[in-house]
Image (cartoon, rainbow, N blue to C red):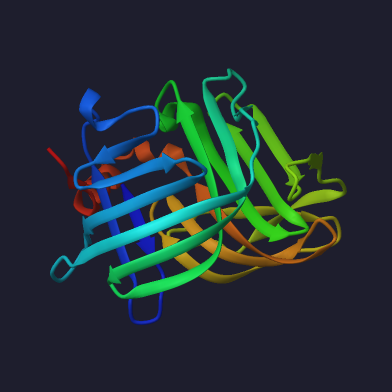
Length: 251
């Protein structure tokens, strides 16, 4: 269970890994330690009961509830590698959310997004890198660019309307973004003739970065959530040690 909160004076980050026995998972949801997420009719409810995993200082509680109400759904199940061993489900690309986290003291409503990934083998053995983005403009604007360990590449760029209709984004190209402090190379898919600007880096790690990117996509200016992953770095021992320091184990 990974919880990341970016708020002035109330930011928090927690990551817990734990076993998923038969009692912890079902058709409607899953429980990881004291936290859980489950579908209740047409909404996804996430109850969070975690503690931060700081590199320095004392751990703090992260507790509360997040409710996601899908506004548009898709049945898309997409392969993101050439062997079909890793899949991506952009299940609710348009959604409304309610966030109530008494700890660390964050409460708001807004727009959200829900997807899922799953793979049959470790990320580090399947991919060199991937770059994903999602923006809310005229519908949901989604891009996914993958470089596989085999040398193959796969790119996706499409729009999902409020009615769930899907169409490809045309006249787009790849533009470089500023590298991270960990020297991760970042790039984004944008309208041809335009570039992208990193407005704020939210996560900057040795193999993963998350940022808000200002660009033009689908014919209009957008502020996109952008992620870069460099799975090949997971093969390095020093990266594994950093991950161990940042992750809590739930037994």
